[in-house]
Image (tube, rainbow, N blue to C red; front, side, top):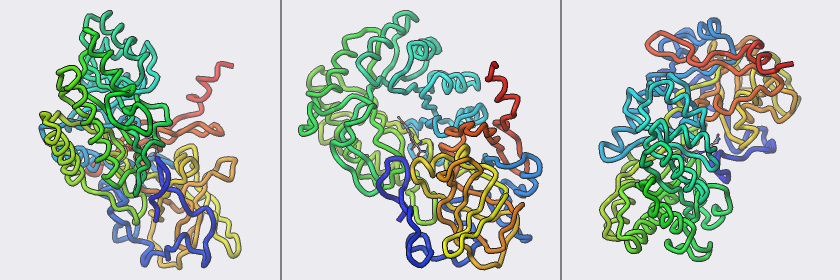
Length: 475
Ligand code: LLP
């Protein structure tokens, strides 16, 4: 099973199991098939065996844009935005989490599709504003926003700043006063839930840097006595801040709604305590992001509609039980929107068969364009996309060109035994946290993001050049 025990990605298959197969998985029946759960919506294998996306042959894309490259299916991105929007409806807001992947084109798509945007740095804020996102649809996050970032956000008129510490309450209030603006804020709370895929572990999650703890102590999770309640008291005393609600984000790549259920219950518990103490009913709840996607055929994420219904039901039930008006709900999916919409296109450079073990397939990218495998033991799948093949399955490890052995893109994969240098491989579901976490390690040039739609392709983030690298190196 690919979903266990890491807050930001699955972890397993370090050791080659008996029988040479990764885990208990046998080779897929057809190496040429493309699982629609994992691939962007317009990806197809054509009659001649090559794969196309948005109506464009990957061989032509490689020719025109080079490899490695992130190929992003714009129609799929927009469809996922619409699915999330309509699943939550008019009574809720969907904030796309820009940290998953942000560019000016993405901001425009979000704007057009009616989504809001969560930014977590000055750079993301600048991108959002530059591309014309209305400031009132932007939320600013971060556990250590600089005074300059706060000042720019308040000055721009962002719709929401999510407060993450006591120090920040004063900083945002100060900026609001300077700009003569009453700044809407939420308070990020730590609800004592650690969301793994199948489990949540109460209390452990409080030992981390984000948010203000709900609980007075880990053993007594009732709202009211903890730092979060104290933050509410302080914010309500400040005329420059308008406290609109409570925010909770419990983790990432989550499939199980149980963690959200506990989170919503505890957030509503705080709303109730706030009403009882201050006579104020806060009008908003944000339950964060973290909804999981399929990286391999074994992952089975829920549809946005089902997720929205589950979250709405939880919040409604808890509010009714507490006698509170149901607040406006918002969520912040990043990965669930952009993750499945892109794949990374690589060219095979070398192959090394290790007798009795596996074949190492080296591609022209690696940990600089996808750090997730090395960092989180994340699992990916991979397919030969420049042609089909009837050759036998070959147990493979797809690795990059960086100078370390942890430079693994896909730890365990079956590829056709006739794979050869020059073949194109694609790793699906790389839309989230791959380009946004890409690095220049070994002075690699970060790959472009190419958007495809209706038979046309355009670069939305260009490939880095050696001039780009040298421009920063002032000698
Ligand atoms: N909202 C907040 C406050 C967050 O901190 C995050 C992610 C999200 C929303 C969006 O979460 P998503 O829906 O994309 O899971 N680099 C890691 C993921 C880190 C997520 C950090 N916060 C990875 O590659 O898996």
